[in-house]
Image 1 (cartoon, rainbow, N blue to C red):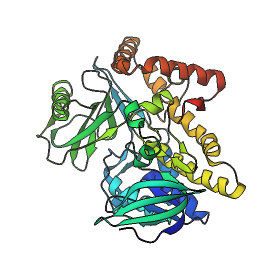
Image 2: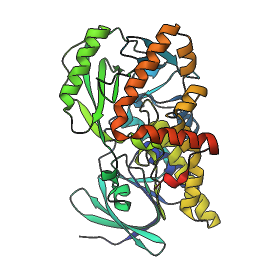
Image 3: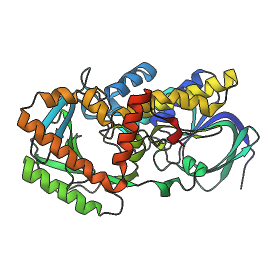
Image 4: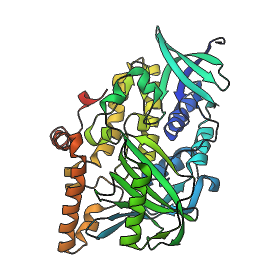
Length: 408
């Protein structure tokens, strides 16, 4: 059953932080904006929740002080600690002080409400069809009722497995490697890891992405690996390693473990997906992910840029895609610079000073870290990213930016 078509200016798919940022720009500019979300709000979001300083500034400037309900305990994070197989550890404080530890279920919902846009939850995106200069978006409400909307613009802010992206490029998910990222929660017996820091392991035997930090009286033990491996075995390997090497004694994992599919590749090798015609892709759906796996700050900024591009396109009658790609190139530079070996070695692309922390160590430890990082990088050899990363690094050096011809 399909109801009468309603017309709005913009439909944003996914009640994410990227959606909130885009909606805030559009609503403030007078665009009738509708956010649709497949789950009931406030909805659970799989995320460790450590927001970067840049993301914190954006939220303060655009949405105001973050409410207490939208924070986990500890409520703030001081920085990042890197751990290496050689048992050298290196702590780095964030520039500008501590940052919030977001409870994504409530932080995202608070930002969505603060955007001022209309929201319809329990509403799934089904498909979209062009009709002249517009899009006909078909949704399905809880209970199976289909509802159609007519809109001038669509924004896909619906995460790495984006249905909007798949509607534009059906073969895209088969063209990229996928990873599983999962975390389990443990009651703590004894944990020497400093609870003011996010802890990350550059250890190829533990997985492609391994982390731990305190949250709400428990310890997160997280692991990322190529999809298809056994999550529980991978997690147990990490838990055993933390106990053997770091003295982290935890009770068996609680039942409420969680995980999701992720794609780490686009931000490493400059293969972002920004949409087609009057449909924009933003946030993690587009491929934005910072080096330590924090995607919230680049989601907020790229989402805001998507909203601004629509406003500029509508007001000045300019083609949307070239405008968006030109505007979002600044976020591409900021994000991909974090994975760029030349920028890491000779610049300051991160929000904590890795070169300074490295140089503060004895020479022997510095050499160990460089060796360990090389061995960790070799874990990604099967994806053939090494040459692509170096090619993009050289292009960045030569042109001052990353080339847009690699973007979809």
